[in-house]
Image (tube, rainbow, N blue to C red; front, side):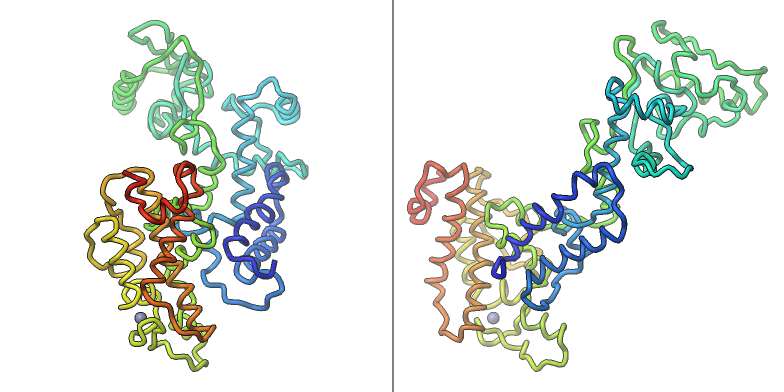
Length: 437
Ligand SMILES: [Zn+2]
């Protein structure tokens, strides 16, 4: 356990610390204190391992906890995960009218005025799980949209079926005048007859202001269409296929829209490489690898020499220098791009290098796999060589033999994917172009 790489620790966190509580999280509300201590366990384990002493937490936890599309590792955030999992019951309730749990909830709490859900338990001292689940009821409803069928389940004024807003908000005067509150669309119109003949049940004749609203409402209703053959349905508006997913709900709860997208996400996480290599590339993209300048920033009192790069023995050791701009490292990049026949200019940062979508000469799947394996192998080998020279105090290897290692690692990682199962490792190492052509 002590020598587990960060990739191994991430896998363990996903499988154990995050996986085990799922069962409880999907029905019961997790106490904040428990969530916080579990997250602390994850955080410390990811960065420090077990009993290895204190180590630097290279990236703040809020960022780590974001989804990988937003630059994190997608672990943690147990409170939001808990809420999203409990939301699943709200979604399932109207879909499973014959299930025992549905009947039990219905008999205890009754059906909400909207006709779909069990009543949310707003007050009361009951400690039932339903109290915690229905806590998120109104936010949940915001994410539902309606698909109108025969109009027998959707309320005319109160549900958002025609516009983004409900009709009682858009036409408040008419709503007050109508005596058909909480009534379904089918009570307003005979859906099988076209053109539709609406009956709003107004209590008196309309005045001038109300006529203006009425004209606008009629114009909107002209666009309404009904389908007698199918019932009304409710869709989950956060997913394209309209069905609920915890992932989309969790992403909404974590307010993921507020964060900008992480450019290198695809390049890093779709590559078929070991997780430890993913993590290194992820750290490089964030500029948070423990290079001399980063360590110096963290420990201003220590006498380090960030102005000296061990590979080229001239420039300063920063992340972008070490992995990209260094006169030693850049030779790998020239070889890399030449090998794939891609012309390039040196990007400003590793973040840019990983974000740019290069066209590696046609978009064959095999070539793409080799491309991403090779690219991350360059980062990996540079980092290993830097550490070897820094800590083992040995003479450095030349560019040629390091390039051989890059070729070897990338071929090895690629060779275990399904796409290359019919090819030998040596064929991939010696002439990958013949393999993909
Ligand atoms: Zn250098």
